[in-house]
Image (cartoon, rainbow, N blue to C red; front, top):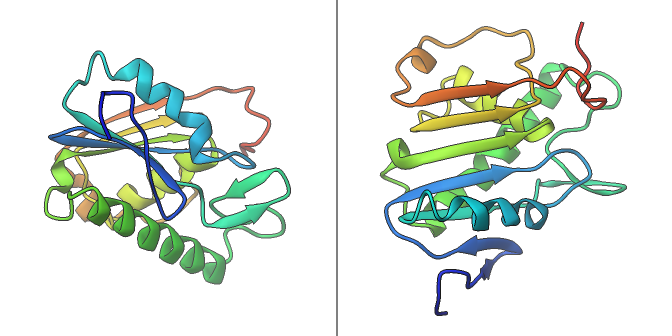
Length: 170
């Protein structure tokens, strides 16, 4: 693999080579990680020492992949546990494969829509203490916010788009 635009694939996840930090893009419902990789190409000029990953969500959806099943009651405690376990397992795989298992402060999650929902939950619940979180058109479901999330060293940016048809607000 040579050149800054070279891609590699690990367990059907696409990665770009780099050095000292890791940005993990998390797509919306019915999409795939590959659809977000063009962002990595445009961000590379500003973040030249950054590795980019864009895994596919773990669950099938009729148009692609999804992070959780939105039909019915997505706030059912069993579904939340299942979603968190699948998310954490996948993120642990990506983080280990990229060499950042002991460097969570150098990881950023960038989530879009449903991908933003699972990233917000991961940080608010205290399960992931990462360096940065960017949320585009997501929301944080009503839940207890862990005190561990207050100790997350990184920065957070939440960009809300009221017209996102896939995110219901109550």
